[in-house]
Length: 293
Image (cartoon, rainbow, N blue to C red):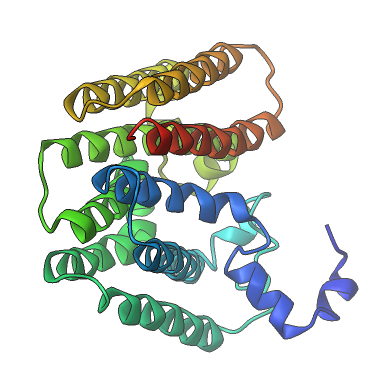
């Protein structure tokens, strides 16, 4: 962590990159993955490259906007949390006006990209915006805000799948269910590192809601992910590569579940497991692509 004088010497563009979390790509990639799962599965492994590009840029713009909106909501809370106190809006390195301007630019970029999509996908993109904007408020009033985040993540599946097929079918909803369960799992893991701070300042999280049963809840969420993906694989006749990737993913989630039950697990372990889920997501993506042929 840089000292205060060093932070003050940071160029503005670097501070903006930190605001957008582009210096921590795992958070951007983990949103992009369900969107890529959907576009490749809906297109039987061969989506148009232009559409893949739009999906990638769209998820980058959307996640950037979500990060800024979250930090605007939490600018007075983040200084009280060890993990977030150094964020640009929390540390007052950037002003609220600059934060709002950057959020508008990011949402504007996402809107421009959405016009490339068909009407169903476009209106799904519009429907996702209120969920993204209100997620930070959910932490104050809803006992399991990670569910709101999971629904926001799920829009990536609906938008990308319908961008290929122009409809939402049973396989779409199976992948949506897998994404919601997966997001509940990995974000509850992530929230476990903030339990002490969140409880002290009165912020809700699934990790606090489930309390001593948080590890069990995570097992259930990952099990739900596996079941939805297995059902999807059967429904659309995916081949060996997919099933091999699902076995690897299942092994990874089992290992994480066992580790979560260890005593005195350091806080750094939760962020490590969050990053591992990015790799698990890419393994599944590879299996979905090659298992579609």
